[in-house]
Length: 101
Image (tube, rainbow, N blue to C red; front, side, top):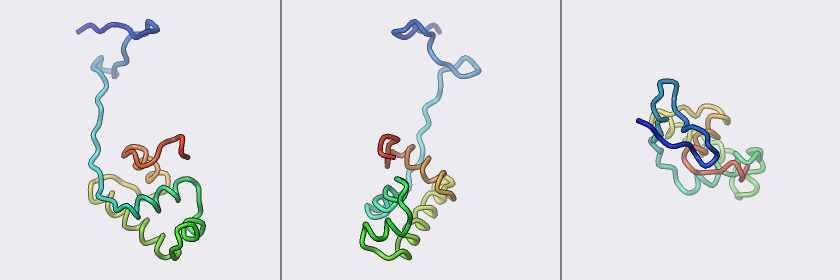
């Protein structure tokens, strides 16, 4: 199978086997609108205390939302045990973009 080079004359990107790259579809957890809101605030670098103050909720509520988000990702087989892992999942799922960080 031969494919044409891109507009700059570069050959098409392929994996190490010569096959075209595979686009992965990840199972998404069913996050509530409030969980998404808490997650987005926290991922933008806000502390949990700042998230609580901005959203007018208790710190314990922020922690509960983050725990439930992590549990929901675990249920679909996608680890999100750290803030970095949650950031990766949110980027993969279109919850946040790099420009928003």
